Length: 342
Image (tube, one colour):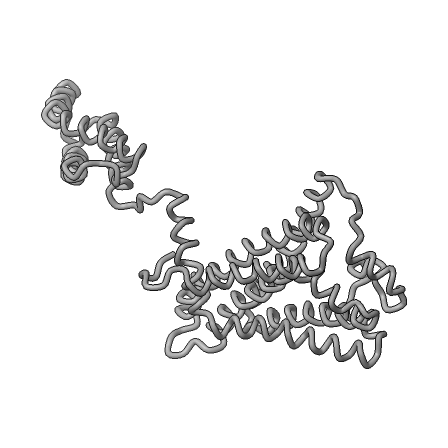
């Protein structure tokens, strides 16, 4: 059967009439879409928002009709683009990036922390057990120090070092320039972030690797503490560690908690499938990792700048634990009474 013949002139007339009858609505819709894209629907009047929704539906009807009666390609392309833009401003979330970050900080992260008591217990317990074990083994035999602490990390701070040398590593100003402080802080953040990401990522394997890596970091901490206590510098070490360690070590424990949250979903999915359990626990695990990242940024700045500039043990203790109290108040009080959110 021969295909029906089309008259290009008639098609052009039909497209022109179709467009002329509906174009004022499309033009108005395009204006409203531009307004919504630039300032958001929240800044629009009620009448404009209502017109936007109605004109979007009319444009979709026009697009369907244009496809059905084979309008010219240019008209179809215009309508498809206009309807796609209108769909985004009508149905897509209109909150800005600062607004999303604000909600994340105001309630998303604190609520995720408060829902993660067991994973957090796992993270902090791993660090504490490691530190206790490392300290006890060093006290029994100082040679354990070389088993736990990599040579590059000790930087000459070994059991054979004199008490005076160890003291200089805690209080030596080094007379570093601001540029050197910046480079040092960047290195510390990069190094600590790599550790935290590894701890978090391995948590999906039943949480065991995250626990082990955090426990190992505790072993290093315990061995260092034992060495300085043996040299009579335990109090000074506490101040040296506190100014950045309260934040940094907590961040590593929280990264472990994020990994443990995924691992527990795999290990103990309950009545759900493991996929469903991971899907349910994933958002809170990611929020814990975001929190760990924020804390590591703060710790790198504290370690790269303040620890080098503040030479008083008492001041170091006050700064470190004062900042730790601020973290605690934020995470325990923010977002209470608000609906759960990102």
